[in-house]
Image (cartoon, rainbow, N blue to C red; front, side):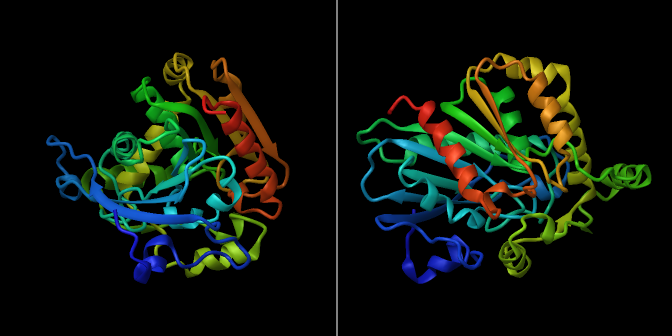
Length: 328
């Protein structure tokens, strides 16, 4: 891993919203690039070669709890937008690890494209395995807590169904992308399906309004100016996303999740204009997991952890992690 201070801003994300905290004293960052998964059976050229995936680990110089929070970011963004997490979690975890998904941020891959949705899921599973091997093994004992936002929340839920033996003490999903808040017209869905088959890697522009992320204008401004953020989506990714959202809500997927022993926390901003919050709430009600928790935030927009009043969200996340820690 590298920690060259000369390129500190380049690798960590240099566009924190004004007023957001930097890394706390006594913390440092290291980053690396490793190969993601690849399928020999895939036909699309974009995923024939394993992409280089970028990872950054923010950690305390002295570990006290052994707790590690792994963050999976949302669509179009990257792990550099989570640089304020260590500030709010410094008394709860010893490390915050962020993976840039393929086609996002500092990772390789065609922007906003994937041939199969669960390439993203398998990249995350690979990342967790890698962290188990590369993070410090000295006392106290390592334990992992997984946090997924929006697209990352959907990937996190799918990861639980693909590997029920994940080394996780708890999972938190923030505004999991189970359904888009604004109904996509049938004609657009049909066109995407056709293009996905014949021109799957064609770039289309999204219609995401940064003002719908948070009531904090500084968040929208930083997002708009961030060169690592993109607004591109291919027909193949769109079709795969539609399929993944639908599958994850089905009874079969819920039945698989019911067999998972990992505790699941759902963070739902009720003012979300990007993810359909009613679908998220229904998913939670249908979720037959013995240890689950729903936290709602009235009037909060999509990124609750970037909202005015985000301290409450971090308080809920910290309480959840501590209550599910074996290292308390």
